[in-house]
Each structure stands twice: as structure tokens, then as C-alpha cells.
Length: 72
Image (cartoon, rainbow, N blue to C red; front, side, top):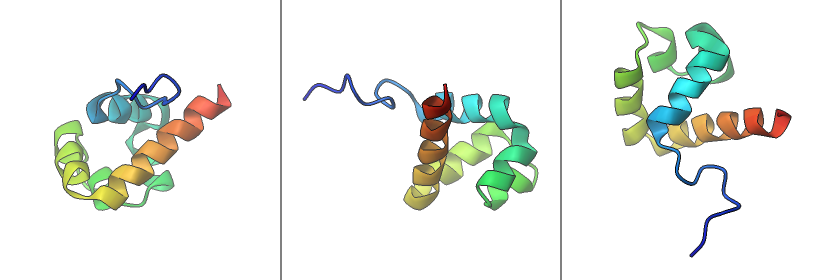
């Protein structure tokens, strides 16, 4: 199945998270997605661990990323 219209195709979760942190910084990311891994001693690695185990949180991160792309 071809994925050329899927903006998430070819993007890793790490790429998405790094883009969001660059765009919002950790405090802004925590404001938009209220989860502890963004509020309490945040890091890329700890957030990735949580997001990979928690589908609803990963979905929120992907949706926020897509909303940034829509604004460009």
C-alpha cells in the first residue's frame, strides 16, 4: 500500500518528538499535551519510552505534530 499522502510516513516517533520540542520547548509541549513525561524532568529518551508503551499519548503527539504541519 502506498503512503505518499500520509505525512507521518517515514517519520520516526523520535523525529516527531524532537520537532515538537524544538517548536514548543518542553513547557509548551506539556501545555498542549498534559502528561508527566513532558512536565517532570523531561527528556527525549524517557518520553519515547512512555509514548511507545502508551498508544493514546502517542496519538496525541502525532495529532499535535500534524496540526503544526497543517499551519505551514
